[in-house]
Length: 113
Image (cartoon, one colour):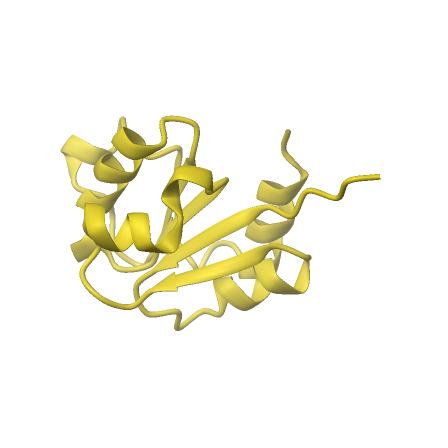
């Protein structure tokens, strides 16, 4: 039996421990701590990623870049601030950490097919 481990990329500071929440549920978590760009996304493995989590809205343009590199990646902004208008149709979901715990986010995303 082949076990498929979901690949989650967390881009930005992880003040709410969203990466740890995905890791605790069996996902492989890779991090981007630099500017989110095509190069840093590719270095993190965006082509094979299942989920991209942006935690810094200043790096949210990385969602559009990620979708170009991997149209199937599910992109979520998990941040205190709102997404810019031009990205609201590109991201799959935007969540305020004050409204949903990282454990719930990880559980919901990993249970989706």
